[in-house]
Length: 284
Image (cartoon, rainbow, N blue to C red):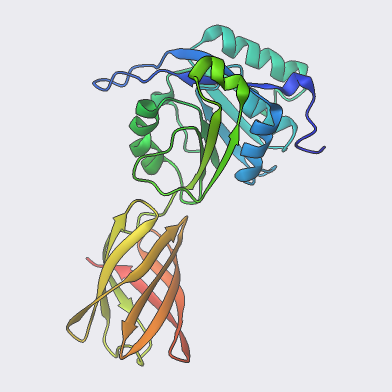
């Protein structure tokens, strides 16, 4: 089924949630609906490349249309949480009526207390304060490579992989504006700290010390210590569990790529007409 050719039954009403009090992060209250054409939800899920292998968790799920669409149209599994009992009941009834209750379910729950570790995709349409109160939870609980879709409000300090913008006239009555933006993020691996790297001898015959510092989440800064000299890393990026950066040594520029594990990095490098492999372990 074409993701854009959804029936009227799948016309979406996404829920805006009011921010939780900063002091204790108690449950958020459901806000007004913002009616959205079905193409918005399908395009959101296509932006995150959602498919049958994905587990989608919608924080502030309202009547459940995002998870229902993810299950029915894209073959994914997942659940939504909301504190509005009536909407949760309606969402579960819709899942039964559509024959997808085995792949889509909904629970009355505080989104701050929700276990999101199973997610490969997290979606949310929340006001800015709530979105940014969730940042630490998203970064600590989600596995590297998990995609995050945030509707209208981005995660402060995070750099999105992609954005999608369009106009929705139906929003004007609620928000006063028609402009809508979808932010897509990918959770990065935790790479900050000190590392000891082994590199080809044409760069250094001795182990190289690396100090990596996250910058705006997917960007990473740092320096390498080669033969006692500090060399700055350039163009550092962490995307999921993939790391890449560039450094200049011996008058040549080398592009490093690697896969990040909990305590190690394995990868390849290319520059100055030379290629090789490199690895690193966390410094003790």
